[in-house]
Image 1 (cartoon, rainbow, N blue to C red):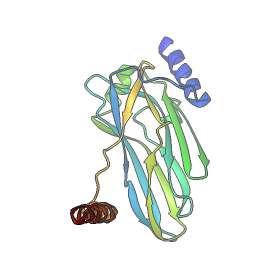
Image 2: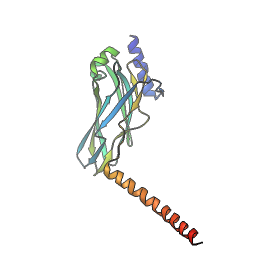
Image 3: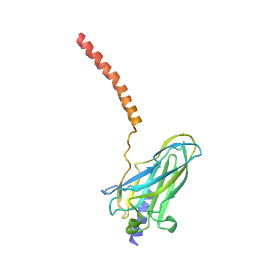
Image 4: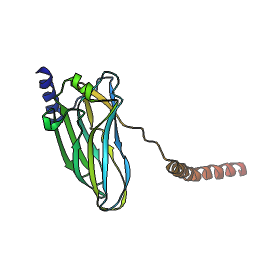
Length: 200
């Protein structure tokens, strides 16, 4: 009974937007797949949200995520929660989501015990699937806002991390090229100043 009360308290904190400072050293990695996609009008895109790297003996008891997307390219079709925190249809978990321009908020709190959560969650598990419909062509990205948070099975905040962004070779080349272009006028001024000083 105490476990369920603590879970309801965690759910109330998530829904009301109470800031829970991540004082715990425990962490969880949240991955959105795909994180970037080419949109086409009328084509569906499914984004899988997965959690991993919780560490041995740690479980996820609740989450409150804010996912950003480009509303000019996509229209949200559906949000389907996974069963790693319990089956919402069996009243094993409470779920909610809302949509604002460019941001989807989805939250869930489990009513299962930490032992039941441990049995339901593997090293990597899916917590939700977002289905979008393309409404215009273009390249879009999906990402988590820093207001997102994870809670463990005992109501303790977890440090949330996302995959480290890595520059593609083409993008890296453009950055180097831009830096070179920015420093060229400076080098030119230094050269002219050196020549003037020598002439003087």
